[in-house]
Length: 199
Length: 265
Image 1: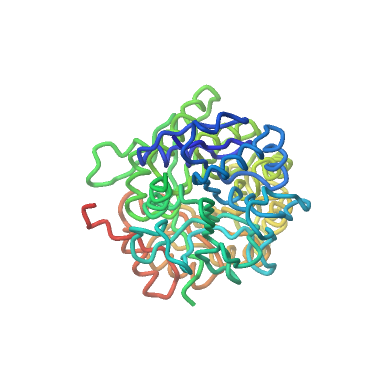
Image 2 (image 1 turned 90 degrees about the horizontal axis):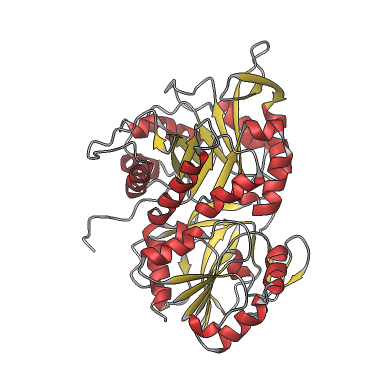
Protein backbone atom coordinates (compact mmCIF):
# COMPACT_ATOMS: atom_id res chain seq x y z
CA UNK A 1 0.00 0.00 0.00
CA UNK A 2 1.12 3.55 -0.85
CA UNK A 3 0.65 6.16 1.86
CA UNK A 4 -0.17 9.68 0.65
CA UNK A 5 0.54 12.45 3.12
CA UNK A 6 -2.19 15.06 3.56
CA UNK A 7 -0.73 18.31 4.84
CA UNK A 8 -3.49 20.77 4.14
CA UNK A 9 -5.62 22.33 1.47
CA UNK A 10 -5.34 21.70 -2.24
CA UNK A 11 -5.63 18.98 -4.78
CA UNK A 12 -4.80 15.67 -3.18
CA UNK A 13 -7.36 13.75 -5.14
CA UNK A 14 -5.49 13.66 -8.46
CA UNK A 15 -2.35 11.92 -7.25
CA UNK A 16 -4.44 9.44 -5.28
CA UNK A 17 -6.63 8.71 -8.29
CA UNK A 18 -3.60 8.35 -10.55
CA UNK A 19 -2.14 5.63 -8.31
CA UNK A 20 -5.53 3.93 -8.03
CA UNK A 21 -5.93 4.12 -11.79
CA UNK A 22 -2.61 2.23 -12.04
CA UNK A 23 -3.91 -0.46 -9.71
CA UNK A 24 -2.14 0.54 -6.49
CA UNK A 25 -3.85 0.62 -3.12
CA UNK A 26 -3.52 3.97 -1.40
CA UNK A 27 -4.25 5.45 1.99
CA UNK A 28 -4.32 9.12 3.04
CA UNK A 29 -2.09 9.87 6.01
CA UNK A 30 -3.02 12.86 8.18
CA UNK A 31 -0.88 12.22 11.23
CA UNK A 32 1.90 10.02 12.55
CA UNK A 33 0.90 6.47 11.87
CA UNK A 34 2.22 2.91 11.85
CA UNK A 35 4.86 3.18 9.15
CA UNK A 36 4.93 -0.55 8.57
CA UNK A 37 1.55 -0.25 6.89
CA UNK A 38 3.16 1.42 3.86
CA UNK A 39 5.40 0.07 1.13
CA UNK A 40 5.95 3.55 -0.28
CA UNK A 41 5.24 7.10 0.77
CA UNK A 42 4.18 10.10 -1.31
CA UNK A 43 4.52 13.71 -0.28
CA UNK A 44 2.28 15.58 -2.73
CA UNK A 45 2.62 19.13 -3.97
CA UNK A 46 0.17 21.65 -2.62
CA UNK A 47 0.49 24.97 -0.82
CA UNK A 48 3.56 26.87 0.34
CA UNK A 49 6.87 25.76 1.90
CA UNK A 50 6.50 27.40 5.32
CA UNK A 51 2.89 26.40 5.99
CA UNK A 52 3.53 22.88 4.72
CA UNK A 53 6.46 22.40 7.14
CA UNK A 54 4.39 23.83 9.99
CA UNK A 55 1.62 21.39 9.26
CA UNK A 56 4.00 18.42 8.99
CA UNK A 57 5.56 19.32 12.32
CA UNK A 58 2.21 19.85 14.01
CA UNK A 59 1.02 16.39 12.98
CA UNK A 60 4.30 14.68 13.93
CA UNK A 61 4.89 13.79 10.33
CA UNK A 62 8.50 15.00 10.13
CA UNK A 63 9.76 12.16 12.31
CA UNK A 64 7.39 9.78 10.55
CA UNK A 65 8.93 10.64 7.16
CA UNK A 66 12.47 10.44 8.56
CA UNK A 67 11.82 7.04 10.10
CA UNK A 68 10.23 5.85 6.88
CA UNK A 69 13.25 6.86 4.79
CA UNK A 70 15.48 4.91 7.19
CA UNK A 71 13.64 1.70 6.27
CA UNK A 72 14.93 2.05 2.70
CA UNK A 73 11.43 1.99 1.24
CA UNK A 74 10.73 4.53 -1.54
CA UNK A 75 9.64 8.08 -0.78
CA UNK A 76 8.31 10.31 -3.56
CA UNK A 77 8.00 14.09 -3.29
CA UNK A 78 5.96 15.86 -5.95
CA UNK A 79 6.35 19.58 -6.73
CA UNK A 80 6.38 21.32 -3.33
CA UNK A 81 6.69 17.82 -1.87
CA UNK A 82 9.99 17.47 -3.73
CA UNK A 83 11.19 20.88 -2.53
CA UNK A 84 10.46 19.97 1.11
CA UNK A 85 13.04 17.17 0.90
CA UNK A 86 15.88 19.73 0.89
CA UNK A 87 17.70 21.81 3.51
CA UNK A 88 16.18 25.28 3.35
CA UNK A 89 13.23 26.91 1.62
CA UNK A 90 12.94 30.65 0.94
CA UNK A 91 9.23 30.94 0.17
CA UNK A 92 7.58 33.51 2.50
CA UNK A 93 10.45 33.19 5.00
CA UNK A 94 13.59 31.12 5.41
CA UNK A 95 12.33 27.75 6.56
CA UNK A 96 14.07 24.53 7.48
CA UNK A 97 12.98 21.73 5.18
CA UNK A 98 13.01 17.98 5.85
CA UNK A 99 16.76 18.14 5.27
CA UNK A 100 16.93 14.70 3.66
CA UNK A 101 18.94 15.99 0.70
CA UNK A 102 21.52 18.71 0.16
CA UNK A 103 20.35 21.93 -1.46
CA UNK A 104 18.18 25.02 -1.06
CA UNK A 105 14.90 26.01 -2.65
CA UNK A 106 14.82 29.51 -4.14
CA UNK A 107 12.59 31.64 -6.35
CA UNK A 108 12.84 31.16 -10.13
CA UNK A 109 14.98 33.82 -11.83
CA UNK A 110 13.29 37.18 -12.21
CA UNK A 111 12.43 38.42 -15.68
CA UNK A 112 10.45 35.35 -16.63
CA UNK A 113 6.76 34.80 -16.16
CA UNK A 114 6.18 33.28 -12.78
CA UNK A 115 4.86 30.68 -12.07
CA UNK A 116 6.64 28.48 -14.58
CA UNK A 117 3.34 27.02 -15.71
CA UNK A 118 2.76 24.59 -18.52
CA UNK A 119 4.18 21.65 -20.46
CA UNK A 120 7.94 21.40 -20.76
CA UNK A 121 10.55 18.85 -21.91
CA UNK A 122 12.93 16.82 -19.81
CA UNK A 123 16.63 16.56 -20.39
CA UNK A 124 17.71 13.32 -18.80
CA UNK A 125 21.14 13.59 -17.15
CA UNK A 126 21.33 10.10 -15.68
CA UNK A 127 19.43 7.10 -16.88
CA UNK A 128 17.15 5.53 -14.32
CA UNK A 129 14.46 2.87 -14.28
CA UNK A 130 12.05 5.68 -13.44
CA UNK A 131 12.32 6.73 -17.10
CA UNK A 132 11.46 3.31 -18.52
CA UNK A 133 8.87 3.15 -21.29
CA UNK A 134 8.37 6.88 -21.76
CA UNK A 135 7.07 7.78 -25.21
CA UNK A 136 9.31 9.75 -27.54
CA UNK A 137 9.80 13.42 -26.74
CA UNK A 138 7.77 13.38 -23.54
CA UNK A 139 6.40 16.56 -21.95
CA UNK A 140 5.45 17.11 -18.35
CA UNK A 141 3.22 19.66 -16.65
CA UNK A 142 5.02 22.12 -14.39
CA UNK A 143 3.47 24.67 -12.04
CA UNK A 144 5.91 26.29 -9.66
CA UNK A 145 7.50 29.57 -8.64
CA UNK A 146 10.41 28.11 -6.64
CA UNK A 147 13.06 25.61 -7.63
CA UNK A 148 16.01 23.69 -6.28
CA UNK A 149 18.82 26.22 -6.65
CA UNK A 150 21.60 24.03 -8.03
CA UNK A 151 21.84 21.02 -10.29
CA UNK A 152 23.26 18.80 -7.55
CA UNK A 153 24.50 15.23 -7.85
CA UNK A 154 21.00 14.05 -6.96
CA UNK A 155 19.43 15.74 -9.98
CA UNK A 156 18.84 13.15 -12.71
CA UNK A 157 16.77 15.28 -15.13
CA UNK A 158 16.36 18.98 -15.76
CA UNK A 159 14.10 21.21 -17.76
CA UNK A 160 14.86 24.65 -19.10
CA UNK A 161 13.07 27.83 -18.12
CA UNK A 162 15.48 30.74 -18.27
CA UNK A 163 18.11 28.52 -16.77
CA UNK A 164 18.26 24.85 -15.85
CA UNK A 165 15.56 23.76 -13.47
CA UNK A 166 16.03 20.49 -11.57
CA UNK A 167 13.05 18.37 -12.62
CA UNK A 168 13.72 14.86 -11.31
CA UNK A 169 15.87 14.00 -8.32
CA UNK A 170 16.92 10.66 -6.95
CA UNK A 171 19.19 9.58 -4.16
CA UNK A 172 18.73 5.89 -3.40
CA UNK A 173 15.15 5.52 -2.14
CA UNK A 174 14.40 9.26 -2.15
CA UNK A 175 12.77 10.48 -5.36
CA UNK A 176 11.29 13.80 -6.39
CA UNK A 177 9.46 15.26 -9.38
CA UNK A 178 9.25 19.05 -9.73
CA UNK A 179 6.42 18.67 -12.26
CA UNK A 180 3.06 17.00 -11.66
CA UNK A 181 3.16 13.44 -13.03
CA UNK A 182 -0.51 13.09 -12.07
CA UNK A 183 -1.29 15.91 -14.52
CA UNK A 184 1.09 14.93 -17.30
CA UNK A 185 -1.06 12.51 -19.25
CA UNK A 186 0.26 9.07 -20.26
CA UNK A 187 3.93 9.85 -19.65
CA UNK A 188 3.19 11.08 -16.15
CA UNK A 189 1.30 7.89 -15.38
CA UNK A 190 4.24 5.88 -16.72
CA UNK A 191 6.58 7.60 -14.24
CA UNK A 192 4.22 6.86 -11.36
CA UNK A 193 3.99 3.26 -12.50
CA UNK A 194 7.78 3.01 -12.55
CA UNK A 195 7.91 4.51 -9.06
CA UNK A 196 5.35 1.95 -7.89
CA UNK A 197 7.51 -0.81 -9.30
CA UNK A 198 10.28 0.13 -6.88
CA UNK A 199 8.12 -1.35 -4.13
CA UNK B 1 17.08 25.43 -27.89
CA UNK B 2 15.31 22.17 -27.19
CA UNK B 3 13.58 23.07 -23.99
CA UNK B 4 10.91 25.68 -24.48
CA UNK B 5 7.70 25.98 -22.53
CA UNK B 6 4.92 24.81 -24.79
CA UNK B 7 1.99 26.96 -25.85
CA UNK B 8 -1.18 25.44 -24.45
CA UNK B 9 -4.43 24.68 -26.29
CA UNK B 10 -7.43 24.62 -23.98
CA UNK B 11 -10.98 23.53 -24.82
CA UNK B 12 -13.63 25.13 -22.62
CA UNK B 13 -16.78 23.27 -21.64
CA UNK B 14 -19.88 24.98 -20.29
CA UNK B 15 -21.47 22.89 -17.57
CA UNK B 16 -25.04 23.15 -16.33
CA UNK B 17 -26.39 20.83 -13.65
CA UNK B 18 -23.49 18.47 -14.25
CA UNK B 19 -23.95 18.27 -18.03
CA UNK B 20 -22.15 19.87 -20.94
CA UNK B 21 -24.37 22.45 -22.59
CA UNK B 22 -24.14 24.35 -25.91
CA UNK B 23 -23.56 20.95 -27.44
CA UNK B 24 -20.54 18.91 -28.28
CA UNK B 25 -20.43 17.06 -31.52
CA UNK B 26 -17.92 14.26 -31.43
CA UNK B 27 -18.97 12.10 -34.34
CA UNK B 28 -18.06 8.86 -32.66
CA UNK B 29 -19.63 9.55 -29.30
CA UNK B 30 -23.06 8.44 -28.23
CA UNK B 31 -23.43 10.95 -25.40
CA UNK B 32 -21.36 14.09 -25.73
CA UNK B 33 -23.29 15.79 -22.97
CA UNK B 34 -21.44 13.78 -20.36
CA UNK B 35 -18.53 15.94 -19.17
CA UNK B 36 -16.47 12.88 -18.20
CA UNK B 37 -16.79 11.44 -21.70
CA UNK B 38 -15.94 14.81 -23.26
CA UNK B 39 -12.97 15.33 -20.96
CA UNK B 40 -11.62 11.89 -21.79
CA UNK B 41 -12.04 12.53 -25.52
CA UNK B 42 -10.27 15.91 -25.40
CA UNK B 43 -7.47 14.34 -23.39
CA UNK B 44 -7.04 11.69 -26.10
CA UNK B 45 -7.06 14.38 -28.79
CA UNK B 46 -4.16 16.15 -27.12
CA UNK B 47 -5.74 19.03 -25.20
CA UNK B 48 -3.17 20.50 -22.82
CA UNK B 49 -5.65 21.48 -20.20
CA UNK B 50 -9.42 21.68 -19.69
CA UNK B 51 -11.65 24.46 -18.41
CA UNK B 52 -15.08 23.70 -16.98
CA UNK B 53 -17.29 26.73 -16.66
CA UNK B 54 -20.23 26.00 -14.39
CA UNK B 55 -23.34 27.97 -15.27
CA UNK B 56 -25.54 26.25 -12.70
CA UNK B 57 -27.61 28.84 -10.89
CA UNK B 58 -28.43 27.26 -7.55
CA UNK B 59 -26.26 26.26 -4.65
CA UNK B 60 -27.99 22.90 -4.32
CA UNK B 61 -26.86 21.87 -7.76
CA UNK B 62 -23.31 22.89 -6.93
CA UNK B 63 -22.96 19.50 -5.27
CA UNK B 64 -23.34 17.99 -8.72
CA UNK B 65 -20.29 19.97 -9.81
CA UNK B 66 -18.17 18.57 -6.97
CA UNK B 67 -19.21 15.05 -7.94
CA UNK B 68 -18.42 15.76 -11.56
CA UNK B 69 -14.94 17.10 -10.78
CA UNK B 70 -14.29 13.94 -8.76
CA UNK B 71 -15.35 11.76 -11.66
CA UNK B 72 -13.20 13.63 -14.17
CA UNK B 73 -10.18 13.57 -11.85
CA UNK B 74 -10.54 9.82 -11.62
CA UNK B 75 -9.66 9.23 -15.23
CA UNK B 76 -8.36 12.35 -16.91
CA UNK B 77 -4.82 13.20 -15.90
CA UNK B 78 -4.31 16.67 -17.32
CA UNK B 79 -4.86 20.02 -15.56
CA UNK B 80 -8.43 21.05 -14.89
CA UNK B 81 -9.64 24.59 -14.20
CA UNK B 82 -13.12 25.09 -12.79
CA UNK B 83 -14.93 28.40 -12.75
CA UNK B 84 -18.34 30.02 -12.66
CA UNK B 85 -19.97 31.67 -9.65
CA UNK B 86 -17.39 30.57 -7.08
CA UNK B 87 -17.58 33.10 -4.26
CA UNK B 88 -15.85 31.71 -1.17
CA UNK B 89 -12.66 30.07 0.03
CA UNK B 90 -14.60 27.06 1.27
CA UNK B 91 -16.17 26.54 -2.17
CA UNK B 92 -12.69 26.79 -3.69
CA UNK B 93 -11.37 24.26 -1.22
CA UNK B 94 -14.17 21.78 -1.99
CA UNK B 95 -13.60 21.99 -5.72
CA UNK B 96 -9.80 21.77 -5.42
CA UNK B 97 -10.00 18.81 -3.09
CA UNK B 98 -12.37 17.12 -5.51
CA UNK B 99 -9.57 17.19 -8.08
CA UNK B 100 -9.52 20.58 -9.80
CA UNK B 101 -6.11 22.23 -10.16
CA UNK B 102 -7.18 25.81 -10.57
CA UNK B 103 -10.20 27.93 -9.76
CA UNK B 104 -11.15 30.78 -12.04
CA UNK B 105 -12.90 33.79 -10.57
CA UNK B 106 -14.48 36.57 -12.58
CA UNK B 107 -17.38 38.70 -11.21
CA UNK B 108 -16.68 37.57 -7.65
CA UNK B 109 -13.14 38.95 -7.87
CA UNK B 110 -14.43 42.36 -8.98
CA UNK B 111 -17.01 42.46 -6.20
CA UNK B 112 -14.63 41.10 -3.59
CA UNK B 113 -10.94 41.37 -4.57
CA UNK B 114 -9.84 39.79 -1.27
CA UNK B 115 -11.19 36.51 -2.63
CA UNK B 116 -8.18 36.48 -4.98
CA UNK B 117 -5.63 37.38 -2.32
CA UNK B 118 -7.06 35.01 0.26
CA UNK B 119 -7.35 32.24 -2.32
CA UNK B 120 -3.73 32.76 -3.37
CA UNK B 121 -2.54 32.75 0.22
CA UNK B 122 -4.50 29.63 1.07
CA UNK B 123 -3.91 27.51 -2.03
CA UNK B 124 -1.03 29.25 -3.81
CA UNK B 125 -1.16 31.67 -6.74
CA UNK B 126 -0.98 28.82 -9.22
CA UNK B 127 -4.50 27.79 -8.15
CA UNK B 128 -6.12 31.15 -8.82
CA UNK B 129 -7.01 32.20 -12.36
CA UNK B 130 -8.26 35.77 -12.79
CA UNK B 131 -10.87 35.58 -15.53
CA UNK B 132 -11.73 38.88 -17.18
CA UNK B 133 -14.38 39.77 -19.76
CA UNK B 134 -13.58 43.01 -21.53
CA UNK B 135 -14.80 45.11 -24.46
CA UNK B 136 -13.49 48.12 -26.32
CA UNK B 137 -14.50 51.43 -24.71
CA UNK B 138 -17.51 52.80 -26.52
CA UNK B 139 -16.61 56.48 -26.39
CA UNK B 140 -12.92 56.82 -27.28
CA UNK B 141 -12.09 53.24 -28.36
CA UNK B 142 -8.64 53.62 -26.88
CA UNK B 143 -8.91 51.14 -24.07
CA UNK B 144 -11.12 48.38 -22.77
CA UNK B 145 -13.73 48.22 -20.03
CA UNK B 146 -14.22 45.28 -17.70
CA UNK B 147 -17.64 43.65 -17.56
CA UNK B 148 -19.14 41.27 -15.01
CA UNK B 149 -22.16 39.00 -14.66
CA UNK B 150 -21.48 37.15 -17.89
CA UNK B 151 -20.74 40.35 -19.77
CA UNK B 152 -24.06 41.98 -18.92
CA UNK B 153 -22.83 44.66 -16.56
CA UNK B 154 -20.12 47.23 -17.26
CA UNK B 155 -17.90 48.08 -14.30
CA UNK B 156 -15.90 51.23 -13.60
CA UNK B 157 -12.68 49.22 -14.07
CA UNK B 158 -10.43 49.55 -17.07
CA UNK B 159 -8.79 46.40 -18.36
CA UNK B 160 -5.06 47.10 -17.99
CA UNK B 161 -5.45 48.52 -14.50
CA UNK B 162 -7.58 45.57 -13.41
CA UNK B 163 -5.28 42.83 -14.69
CA UNK B 164 -2.35 44.51 -12.91
CA UNK B 165 -4.39 44.54 -9.74
CA UNK B 166 -5.29 40.86 -10.19
CA UNK B 167 -1.59 40.06 -10.49
CA UNK B 168 -0.83 42.07 -7.37
CA UNK B 169 -3.62 40.35 -5.46
CA UNK B 170 -1.97 37.04 -6.25
CA UNK B 171 -3.68 35.62 -9.34
CA UNK B 172 -1.35 33.13 -11.02
CA UNK B 173 -2.79 33.48 -14.49
CA UNK B 174 -5.16 35.71 -16.50
CA UNK B 175 -7.92 34.25 -18.66
CA UNK B 176 -8.86 37.12 -20.95
CA UNK B 177 -12.03 37.01 -23.03
CA UNK B 178 -12.68 39.62 -25.67
CA UNK B 179 -16.40 40.32 -25.72
CA UNK B 180 -16.03 42.05 -29.09
CA UNK B 181 -14.66 38.86 -30.61
CA UNK B 182 -16.41 36.14 -28.60
CA UNK B 183 -18.52 34.00 -30.91
CA UNK B 184 -17.52 35.95 -34.05
CA UNK B 185 -14.85 33.53 -35.31
CA UNK B 186 -12.98 36.59 -36.61
CA UNK B 187 -9.80 35.75 -34.73
CA UNK B 188 -8.40 36.60 -31.33
CA UNK B 189 -8.28 40.22 -30.20
CA UNK B 190 -4.58 40.84 -30.81
CA UNK B 191 -4.49 44.48 -29.62
CA UNK B 192 -6.22 43.68 -26.37
CA UNK B 193 -4.03 40.66 -25.69
CA UNK B 194 -0.87 42.66 -26.39
CA UNK B 195 -1.98 45.35 -23.96
CA UNK B 196 -2.47 42.75 -21.23
CA UNK B 197 0.67 40.65 -21.82
CA UNK B 198 2.69 43.89 -21.74
CA UNK B 199 1.12 44.87 -18.43
CA UNK B 200 1.53 41.65 -16.40
CA UNK B 201 4.24 39.12 -15.74
CA UNK B 202 1.97 36.10 -15.26
CA UNK B 203 0.72 33.72 -17.97
CA UNK B 204 -2.18 34.94 -20.11
CA UNK B 205 -4.79 32.74 -21.80
CA UNK B 206 -6.38 34.20 -24.93
CA UNK B 207 -10.11 33.66 -25.34
CA UNK B 208 -12.77 34.83 -27.73
CA UNK B 209 -12.80 34.85 -31.50
CA UNK B 210 -11.06 31.65 -32.56
CA UNK B 211 -12.46 30.50 -35.88
CA UNK B 212 -9.62 28.74 -37.68
CA UNK B 213 -6.15 27.28 -37.30
CA UNK B 214 -4.73 30.55 -38.72
CA UNK B 215 -6.22 32.43 -35.78
CA UNK B 216 -4.17 30.31 -33.38
CA UNK B 217 -1.00 30.79 -35.45
CA UNK B 218 -1.65 34.56 -35.39
CA UNK B 219 -2.24 34.80 -31.67
CA UNK B 220 0.94 32.89 -30.83
CA UNK B 221 3.14 34.70 -33.35
CA UNK B 222 1.77 38.20 -32.82
CA UNK B 223 1.37 38.19 -29.03
CA UNK B 224 3.12 36.79 -25.99
CA UNK B 225 0.15 34.76 -24.70
CA UNK B 226 0.86 31.37 -23.15
CA UNK B 227 -2.33 29.60 -24.10
CA UNK B 228 -5.40 29.88 -26.28
CA UNK B 229 -8.87 28.78 -25.30
CA UNK B 230 -11.83 27.98 -27.48
CA UNK B 231 -15.15 26.20 -27.19
CA UNK B 232 -17.44 25.67 -30.14
CA UNK B 233 -14.82 25.22 -32.86
CA UNK B 234 -13.50 22.22 -30.93
CA UNK B 235 -16.91 20.95 -29.86
CA UNK B 236 -18.19 20.92 -33.42
CA UNK B 237 -15.01 19.58 -34.94
CA UNK B 238 -14.41 22.70 -37.03
CA UNK B 239 -10.82 22.69 -35.85
CA UNK B 240 -9.13 19.36 -35.22
CA UNK B 241 -6.83 19.45 -32.22
CA UNK B 242 -4.21 17.16 -33.75
CA UNK B 243 -4.07 19.07 -37.02
CA UNK B 244 -3.95 22.35 -35.09
CA UNK B 245 -0.92 21.22 -33.11
CA UNK B 246 0.85 19.98 -36.24
CA UNK B 247 0.28 23.28 -38.03
CA UNK B 248 1.47 25.28 -35.03
CA UNK B 249 4.62 23.16 -34.87
CA UNK B 250 5.22 23.74 -38.60
CA UNK B 251 5.04 27.46 -37.89
CA UNK B 252 7.77 27.10 -35.25
CA UNK B 253 5.36 27.56 -32.37
CA UNK B 254 6.37 25.23 -29.54
CA UNK B 255 3.52 22.84 -28.78
CA UNK B 256 3.12 19.52 -27.07
CA UNK B 257 2.47 16.97 -29.78
CA UNK B 258 0.40 14.11 -28.43
CA UNK B 259 2.37 10.90 -28.28
CA UNK B 260 1.29 8.38 -30.86
CA UNK B 261 -1.72 6.45 -29.70
CA UNK B 262 -1.49 4.02 -32.57
CA UNK B 263 0.44 1.40 -30.66
CA UNK B 264 -1.83 -1.07 -28.95
CA UNK B 265 -0.09 -1.16 -25.63
